[in-house]
Amino acid sequence: MIAHVVYRQEIHAEVGGIIPEWASREHEVKLPLAVQQVLKEGQTSWRDLEAIAAAQGPGLIGSLLIGSTYARALAAAWQRPFIGVHHLEAHVASLELQGKPLAYPLIVLVATGGHTHLFQVLHPLHFQLIGRTRDDAVGEAFDKVAASLGLPYPGGPAIEKLSQMGDPYAFSFPLPQTPHPWDFSFSGLKTAFIYARQKHPNLPVEDLCASWQHTVALYLVDKLIKAAQTLGVPRVGLVGGVAANLYLRQLLQTKAEAEGYEVFLAPLSYCMDNAAMIAVAAWHKYINGAYTSLTEAPFAR
Image (cartoon, rainbow, N blue to C red; front, side, top):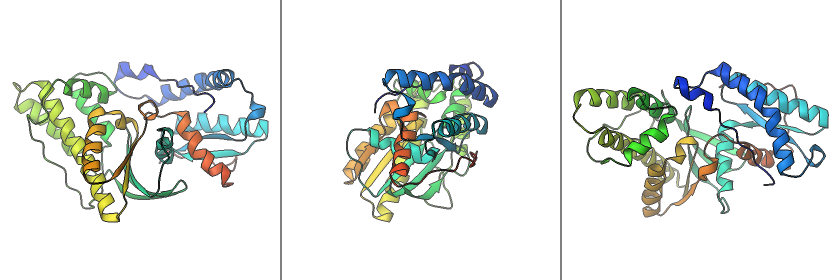
């Protein structure tokens, strides 16, 4: 990697969630500046680029339109191939930034604010979706639980900070059940936390948060490991914004390694959405000639 620039949109924290219109406007203003900065830091120019890549979806359509349109315009102006990248496949590609060679096949849990997906990854260009959330995503559940406590957005780090001071076994939350063994459901867990808070006002909030975080982490890890066991895959991976949760990372490493599975974790600095993971995913498409038409529009879902 020659250079990497990350811009975090802090403007959403004051309202406790992402405002799509604000996000799009921030993209429009900051994206050209970020491109200029990364070329400067990399001491390179557009003439040295072999291709231009951008996320095609899923995600907020306004922000995707800004990024994709800008990238396609650069590709046309600079006469370079354009490569559109699936957002979730890019998160999986972030595992290649963790320092050791990534081996295939593996089962990967993508845990973000908007998605909770299980993929069987056979090679960098072959993904099989084997499980997904049936309602809230895990990151969304963290945000809603945090909001119920008056904690800041995003909620994951706030819940994790409180949990570090609590007892993860102080309260027992029920594990959700789904018709498909590798699907997820978080709406019930979110509601269970709110009811527990109301029913047990004297229970320290740190203990309640720690117990809820433990239940969520255990739920995710058990699904991931059982999917690997059933499919006979010897490796598991964890990516996405929720993958930055240290309790979840440690629980996965402990339980998976005890079962003899090799564990791959997205580096903490590349768990949130970032350009580096888009570039890694795009590289595999580039070397295989899998270019994207300049007329292909981004998609929200």
